Image 1 (spheres, rainbow, N blue to C red):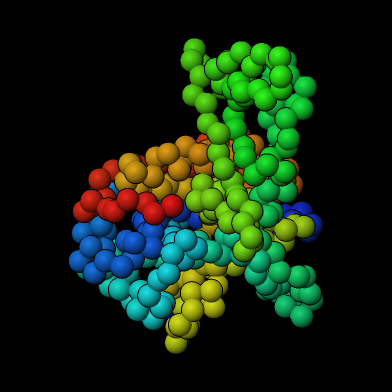
Image 2: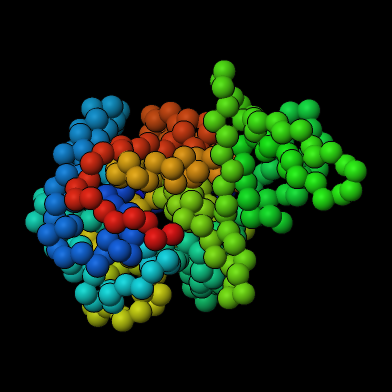
Length: 343
């Protein structure tokens, strides 16, 4: 099959590894473990409903692309983190066949657990022998780049997110209970959003929970990591975090034996992209609102941001300054009613 083209900036800062970039990454599905137990027809119906919206998105980008046909890739995210799945040898062919029957082509398939787990670093494509770095967790890399956003006129005395595992976009309500004798409880005050427009929309988001068995990341946190990976802005000391690997001749029985991102279409445009679009059902709206809140407090490496902005400019593209504004959504009916999220 014809190999996919890779687009690199040869003059990029040597300290920041450049990654191939598409114009748009379209997510065709984020399947929870209970979805993945459904038969093939469930997925055929899902992809058929998605197809019309994918075609619309593609047409819109073809109309505005200043230099010919846009590079657009598709992806699917598999929840192998919160539930037990059938082995890859069963699920991967089922998903690919269902998309094909619906007239769509999946380019990349990703494991949600790969956004959380410590895994070997992506090898150096020029000289893999030089790569002796220990494994890393993409979620931990994002936590290291979180910047606290204290409310105006406060001292920032509340515990930082790295200690609590909770992130919010404003001022929480004070606790009103007291257990000290002769002391009145604190008067209740409503929470307040930092950047409220007329009225507050306050969000308080659990990023992780430390259980006896280890750290359990939240769906919102892993989805935020997923968006940053798709946008190509996450680095580990200047090196890219994920490099898609081709579909092996024989799929393993264990999902965690697969790479974080599996390329299932040899003709695919790059996995990372200047912008992302996620097509999903309205039930994902609360999680995606949390994702956006998290990303508003992630400090992207200025060298990485500058490199991507320069490359976009060389292609005649103008990117929003804030990374979160490079993410688009279509909340649509994607098919049969799904079960309740077990999380």
